Image (cartoon, rainbow, N blue to C red):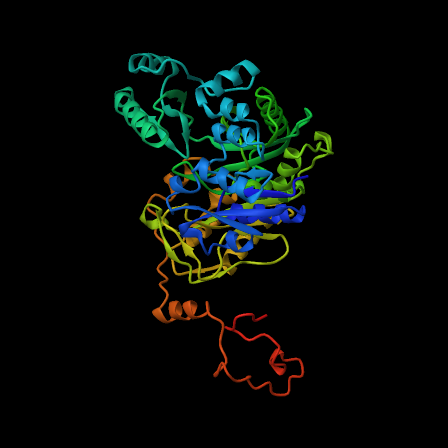
Length: 503
C-alpha cells in the first residue's frame, strides 16, 4: 500500500478522497490554485502544494505543474478525482512514466473509450447493443448520406465530447447542415477536435449507468445501476439507485453488457458504462464509458455497502477483489441531489461569491459530500457545486421523503441556489412515479419560477456575523464563569477565542 498520495483535484471530491486515504493510513497531499488558498481540501490535507493561478488551465489542468508537485512532495501515487485530468490518457501515461501510480484505469483503456466513434466500433465488435448510428469519415456529404439512412430525429455528437458540448439534435433534414456546423465548431473550441458521429435520438429515453469495478488480476464485476435521467442541458441533477424502471431481467442484461464493454478494453479500477434505456420497447443501448469515479458514486456505495474510493486505491496498489458478482446485493434505495450555486429561474446561471452560512442536514442514512464551510468563497473559475446530499432508506418512497426532509434542514445563504427547484422536482407526480426521462426537465419546468421568498437584509447580516466566533467583552480579561465548575474559562490556560495558539 502507498504511504503518500497526491490528489490532483479540488472541492468536494478532493475532500472525499482525503478522507478515503486517511482511513487507509495514507499521507495526503493536496494541490491548490490561487483561488483555493483557504479551501477546505487545503485545510484538511496533511500537506498542500501551490500549483498556479485561478484559471484551471494554469493549475488543475496543468500536467506539468501537478506532476512537479507530486515529485517534489514525494508522492507515490496520484488520484485525479473526476473532471480536469481524470480522463486524460496522456496524463495517466506521464504519471506512469515518472514512476508513480495513476489511481485509475490504464492509459490505453482511457484512450480506447475517450473517442466516442472508436468506442462505438469496439462495442459493436464486443456484442454490446449500440444506438443505431454512424461513425467513420465525417465530411459533410458523407454525414448527410448517413443521416438519411439512420432517420430522424438525429443526435449529432462530438467524438471527443463531454458535458453536452458538441451535441445538437436535428428534428428535420433541413436543420442538418446548420446543426453539423454548430456541433463541429463547438467541439473544436472545447476539445480541439471537430470530428463528429451520428446517432438516432431517442426522445423519451432514460439515462441509466452501470458501475463497474475490476482489479489487475482479471476480476471484473458490476455494482448495479444508477438512474440518471434527471438532467438539464445534459448535466445531471438528481440520481438514484435502484432505477424504478428496471426489472431483474433488464438489470442482469445491462450489468453483463457493462462488464463485456469494460473487458473489451482490458479495464481495471472503477468506471461507469452509460446506457440509454427506451421504456417503450424495453431495450437498452450503449452510450459511452466514463473511465473514472463518477460524481454520483455515493449512492452506489450506500446500496452496495462498499467504499468505491478506497477500492480504487486498493486496486491501484495491486489488491484483488475479495468478493464475486454473486455475493453483491442492492440494499434499500439511495438518492443524490446536487445543490448548486445557480439560479434555475434564470437559465441556471451560475453564481459566485461568499457562502455566508452553510448548515448540512444530519441524521441516520444522510450523507453530505461538500468542499465548503460557512464563509468560504465559491469561485467563478470552477463548477458551482456546493454539495451532494445523499440519503439511504429501505425503499424509494421512504428515500424521497428523507431527501425532502434533508433539504428542508439544509441552509445555504449568501448566493442563489437550486434548493427550491430540487424540492419542486422531488414533489412532482412524474418523479414520484419514476417516469422522469432525459428531456423531462425541459418539458415540465421550462417556465418554472421559484416561489418568492426573499430574505430581509437583517437575515443576511446575521448569517455573515455567524462566521466569526463571539469574543469576550475584553480580550484581556477572563469572562465571568458564574457557577459553572466546568467552564473552560475557569483556567487561564484554557482556550481563548481569537488568540494565537488557542485550543
